[in-house]
Amino acid sequence: MTLFGYSLEQIYLVVLIFVGLATILYMFFGDVAEGIGEGIPILNPSVILSFITMMAATGHVLEKLAWFSSGINLVVAFIIGAILSALFYLFILVPLKSADVSLAYTEESLGGQLGKVIVPIPVDGFGEVVIESASGMISKRATGFDNEAIDYDTTVLIVEVKEGTLFVREYEKKFI
Image (cartoon, rainbow, N blue to C red; front, side, top):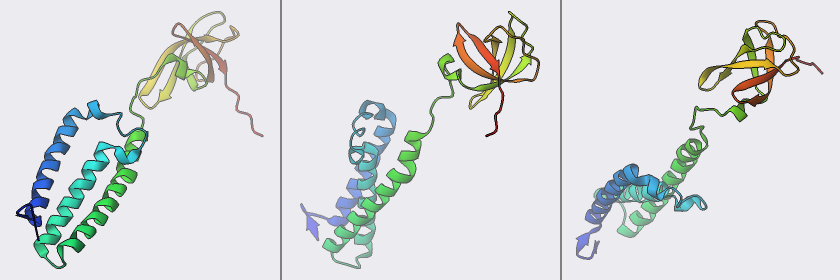
């Protein structure tokens, strides 16, 4: 079958090449189009480009093998492209979007976490607490929340953070 004077095999190949180039450009300049697919995931440029790529590749292979008529090849290519791009969206894009991108922390995010005292905290004084996080170990200056002394290697609860100082209380694990 021909379309615009070209065989469908050639059209699929040209579409595949141009969409491949568009995908490469999107990789480099995709931040410009970042917000396009936020509301409706089907309009995500990555999903659209993957759909067209898979459809053109499948159509080209089916036309090359010529088992069926061109109309059936087009429908099969459309279905395979839709299935593969849906799988790409569900198993690659969604997990990547929900992954934690930053290993940084804010002082406000430390509140409520548990830490261990590595320098004893004296009454009305400062010691040091270490907190394990996704980005590694964080060690911060600490004082007792009620100005109490806290011994070395005690597990503490961070109650609040003010001006880089952790206000902590000894953590008591209660069993119900």
